[in-house]
Amino acid sequence: MNRFLYRAFFIFVGLLIFSACADGPERDVEYTIYTTQSSIELLEGEEFQINASPTTQTFTYESTDKSVATVSSTGLVRGISDGTCFINITSSEGLSRSIPVDVEKLRLLEGIDVYNKSNLMSNDSISIILGQTMELAGNAIPSNYNEKVPFNLIWESSDEDIVTIDDRGKVTTVYFGKAEITVSVADKPSVKKVIPVEVMENPITSIQLEKELILRLNQKHTAEASPLPVNYAVRDSSLVWKSSDESVVKVMDGELEAVGTGTAVVTVSVKSDPTIFSDLTVVVALNPVTLDRTSWEIIDWNSCISEEPQYASLNRTPEKMLDGNLGTFWGSKWDAPKPLPYYFIFDMKKEYKIYSISITKPNDAWRGNIKNGYIEISNDNVNWTKLSDWSVPSNAPRSHSFIQDGSSARYIRFVISDAFEYDKPATGPASGARCDIAEFSVLGEE
Image 1 (tube, one colour):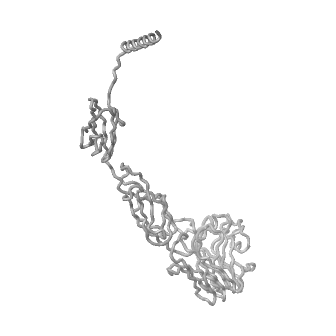
Image 2 (cartoon, rainbow, N blue to C red; image 1 turned 90 degrees about the horizontal axis):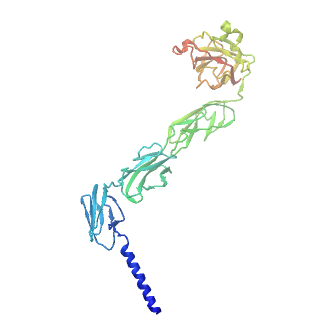
Image 3 (cartoon, rainbow, N blue to C red; image 1 turned 180 degrees about the vertical axis):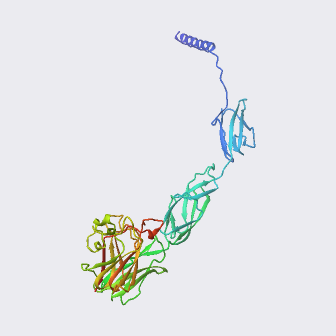
């Protein structure tokens, strides 16, 4: 009985299921071809494998334009030339699908344009001064290449004893000579550029040296010579020192020794190029001192602001150059300047050896305005001998000293020939100038 009921139950359930299936909605299943790519982009010569499904079917492949792209029986697509086409796929059960293909012309990476980062100028060769550095970089040739090669550069030097280059393109000079820098593409080493490099001298063009010097007998002095330009670079930078009169001054490697009274010229030159030199005039005296001006007189002159009545109260007379007070000074005629030159005759009351003549201008930066002239000496105020020319580079310095040769004299005539600014610039010295001097002094000895 129980077995009968059990069988009857399962028959009933089966009938219900069959009835439900028979009465359910109809299903319209769409069959199509599936691929991993809905479109394909290739470069000329590049390949792509189409994987089609369902895998229960077989497929045939065909290109609509074999001059653009071809396809194998297994779905391997190959780009042939620039253009577009379709790959038509047909299944063994009659399904079909078309996949668009775009083939782009292959532009190969062909070269490297190397340029200087500082000025963006291309470099096919490099000339660089020892001690300098530079930074190089590279651009791809052509700039729009599409070859599947990353543009990673490798920098190398053929001789790191001459020049080095790091992985960022920084060039550092090591020594004089020639070498080559090679830059190549890491993943395509056949693409490279070789750049000749020459590390050159930066020659010494002048020597900076003090121009004049007064020493006491037996005094020693170190002369400082500075080759220029400051960034010079030469194989041999040694200097040669020489004295024109070793009975007055001896010199060795810039060390001066005053061995006798008189005047000598010390010359320093570049050993590898003696045409580059500088001279130092050295005067050796027994006991040079700044002379006492208490009894001095200015016995003649030719221009003074006090000549103009409206300025007489300023009291800017030539004698102010001897009073030891920088707050007082001589001034030339102001409203109606006299033509240059201007002069003064100083009577020192006795003969002195003259080693240096100094002038000091008033404190106001715009005052002074004396540019160049000359100095004469005499023992009788009748017969005059030119002692030297003098000049100053600008009106800015307030004090100037002019070294002399130790000649003896009682009278000094100081002459101003030119100024930095004239009353009438177009006319020049003949129109006169407004000049000032606060102090006049002499370094000498009896």
